[in-house]
Image (cartoon, rainbow, N blue to C red; front, side, top):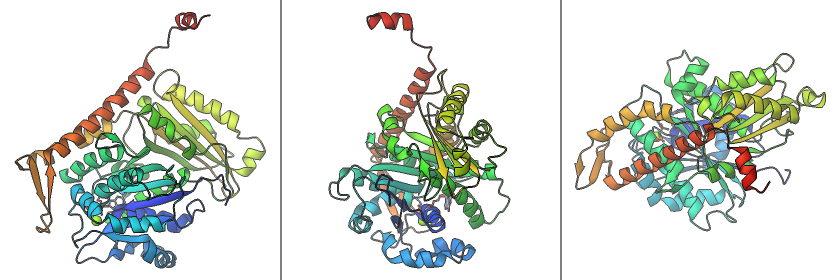
Length: 443
Ligand SMILES: Nc1nc2c(ncn2[C@@H]2O[C@H](COP(=O)(O)OP(=O)(O)OP(=O)(O)O)[C@@H](O)[C@H]2O)c(=O)[nH]1
Ligand SMILES: [Mg+2]
């Protein structure tokens, strides 16, 4: 493989994330990933780990071979007790902490290089993935020796529960999203990608009521977004800009959450990039208002022919992106950070566009979560500053959360939101007084 191409690895924790990652890995066989995919989960006494993949394997019998290949080295069951994580994130974190030796062994086995992009995936409503992934990312970033070199970037994808899900799931989601962004007060992942089950389902108009089929359909959309981020366009694609090269800028700004908005499968003979950008913007994978977005990565994948004959060019794309951003993003200058990249692909015959919108106001996400977050939090019995959580189905699963932990999480997310809102406000402020500034600069 070309030494300049970014190497990616996927680390997925929990059931939903395992399904998404396996589905992605089996379908795309992406050379940027090779075999660096790790599926983590905890055990339950009565359920075999393979049950997670049953539906996908039935749907695509060809995937069975892939599954058999990765089963031994790439599926890691961690945790000291056969408990599952009792659908509470704290249990998921504790199990990962107590059994980190097992997890470390599998991570080492991935043979990551010091410059890989590590793409973590978790659902945010559950206990296992949601509790363990932020902890694992933090550990990989701070513990020397897990990855040699240590100039990795960490991207994390979190999936919000359906609107109809129970308060406990939303309690998990608020805590999980926070812990991906900030872990005990400091930045955790370098880039957090947020998608939302209900929002995606609305977009693709899922009619089926079978749970597995619904997840399967949503996951298909999610993996398309993942594929647009990781080496979009297939093996021989040429991109001008690699998202992975620019992960640090949002971190420097202090705001680093993004949501994919996609418009795929357009006929390049008829569709213009302008139209596809509009379509994409109206299909964000999480509830958001694009007019609050301060950052955007725009990735356009075009069949090679249309790049060679000049229908699409990087220069045009940049102009179109600027115009689009000025019209639709925060402020009069189209946000503060924007990259567009035209990918020319031999394998593609459609015009595909993804806008990764970032820095937008989290108001809509928090608005739909907060009532349930408090419903659950307020139902907890506090004793000497500690809450004990018990799993109704498995009363032997108990976990204690310190009230200080919850306060820390709330402070972290509020701090992050404050900074985001502040950035939006600054972006929207009137332009600087150039005459005055030029004078200050000595002209
Ligand atoms: N998009 C998507 N969401 C899923 C999938 N499976 C579960 N979810 C959502 O994820 C949440 C439950 O998380 P799981 O992934 O099942 O939980 P877990 O990480 O295994 O943790 P436990 O609670 O310990 O089982 C709910 O909000 C579900 O709606 C999936 O395959 N795709
Ligand atoms: Mg589970």
